[in-house]
Image 1 (tube, one colour):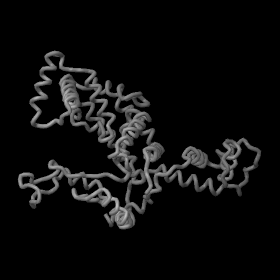
Image 2 (cartoon, rainbow, N blue to C red; image 1 turned 180 degrees about the vertical axis):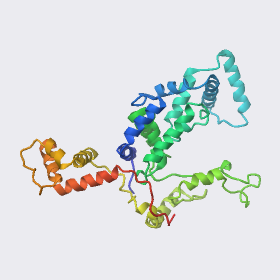
Image 3 (cartoon, one colour; image 1 turned 90 degrees about the vertical axis):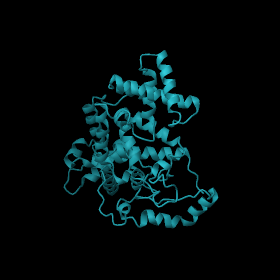
Image 4 (cartoon, rainbow, N blue to C red; image 1 turned 45 degrees about the vertical axis):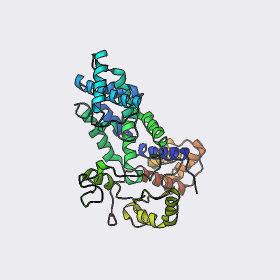
Length: 363
């Protein structure tokens, strides 16, 4: 059975990021959004700079709340406990004692650390942090991220959660933000697998808790249904407590053709966008963009730029021949006229946003 290394996933995540960055108008839209939000033109240089910027947008009361939250997180880590209703009073009393020693009520270092962790997490976007969403400035950030997402995400970019994180991280931290996200994502064995995830309902996901398990009223609540509905394009693999690892692997091995048929072959929504395992593949994007940019020019513009000795100023010669000559003579890239036309066409399609499905009958 094929083994998938961390390097394999890192390469795939980087290809997806590049696909997003190449979407026509994306970088320009991000720069315009940064200007609207009062962010640096190229984003912040580090998480620390961004955290400091955001903290200074908070009111004193909000800073105190963030300081308390940072204390709670640190207390739980140091004492190796989970935060529950049962130990709430213990944590509050510990914070009151801490506050007596530091009566200021606001701690910049704890706030920086806590907000920095929130910014760098790969589990959720920080612009939707419930602790900060009531702040006047902070409340403008998620709508800005959402607007970019609606404008540039397409089915060809696959997982919308990954692309949402790319957009948020790139908006605030540029390429550094995307690189940090990828590093965090691939270091998590639960989260690095593209196209594979798991969901195990907890008590908090269920209605009818007073009725108990196996009652007719013990069903998934609205939030859980909403979360699962986002995976309308998936097949759910249900693993019971008494299944073994070997049994699960054997099941997938024996039934993979059926599983894949349910996922793709019967799903016209994905077939129309040619979504398949080879979609996230390496290609010479730099070369393809060069071909695309040259091919966009008119024949007249190409003739003005061409420095070679060939005479292309005849009506029977198409511009692809000029581009092929420029690629060969100026860049050492050998391509036929037909290959130039096809490469330019493919790249032009790849940078367009593809988010309008034509047919969803099988969903």
